[in-house]
Amino acid sequence: MMDDSSQFRSPDQLIDALLKEKGWTNRILSLVLGMDETAVSRIVNGKRAIDADLAVVLEEAFCVPAEHFLELQQSYDLSQARLAARHDPVRETRAHLFGKLPVSEMIKRGWINAKDLKDPMVQPELVRFFGVNRVEDIEILPHAAKRTQVNTEATPVQLAWLYRVRKIASEMLVARYSPASAKSAISKLRPLLSSAEEARKVPRILAEHGIRFLVVESLPSAKIDGVCFWLNERSPVIALSMRFDRIDNFWFVLRHELEHVDQRHGAGGMMLDSDLEGDSAGTCEGIAEEERVANAAAAEFCVPQKMLEAFVARKAPMFSERDILAFAKMINVHPGLIAGQLRRRIGRYDRFGNHIVKIRSIVTPNAITDGWGDVVPLGN
Picture 1: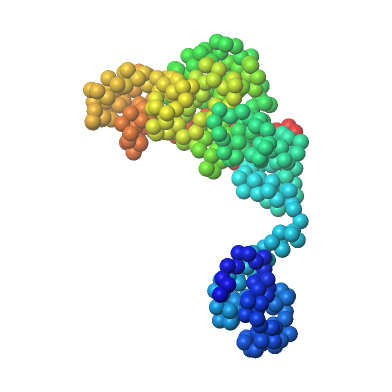
Picture 2 (picture 1 turned 180 degrees about the vertical axis):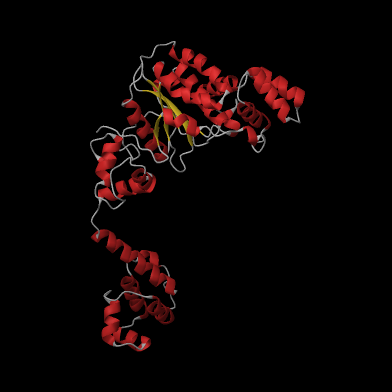
């Protein structure tokens, strides 16, 4: 009995072949099925679709699995639908934009001017946001030009954050930058480590040295800590997300980005730094040389590493409150920086929490800040 349905394009073709194989007419089939001859004619001529009930009846009549009839019907219906459907080249574009970009969050944050996802202004606003002429040129879309030149493969969510940072930075006014500016700024920041309140001076010091510094709240799932890039040869930009509101994280990430500026690491593309917590905050293998250098400089800035090694060698595995406070006083840094470096060194991020103070509310009032309810007004 014929059971290879792959050679047929539709169920009626299979039924016609089965009738010829058996030598049956439509009348005989109608008698076998117990159906009106007109109804059988509609089935044989492909004018009635095969549903599950009819497939079971045909299975009994022809000894062909009902699944074969149903699979042929489904395949035929799909091919007909594809022929009838009008190709919409914008559909794939919309899938990328709304499926990958955090459009709802961008609306909520005031980055694009639209009421909701259904607002017809969403796509024109995305064109404006990404600074392109057509929606097809937005960087996250296939074949669109890569404009940010990020040092690593950035996700669409991260790209949205980067574009917001770049737009804000381009409208900032700071002093003129010189090759010595980064080192000079670092030397003036070092005395601020003794007190959390001193961090309020960071934005002013960096601006006086020609470094555009801003804080932009991260987007959900972006996991961005900071970025360094250059608007031009003399316009370095440092942006932090401050997603971890801790004194040790703030100074580590800031000094990390400053090392990128000093070494001109971001001159050829954005140095996007994400997940600087944990192992990647040290000098582990498998990270880019630029990141290893920046990590080492940041750790040394927070706590001189040879002194930390000596401290650990003397006090491990017990680190008393008195020891941490005495060490912090000796090197003139906030105890939270000692605690942060100890956490990284011993891999215990649940320790010394009483020294890890919050710092975002100290930094952001004096910095260009976008997020946590604040939206930076921008020109068109």
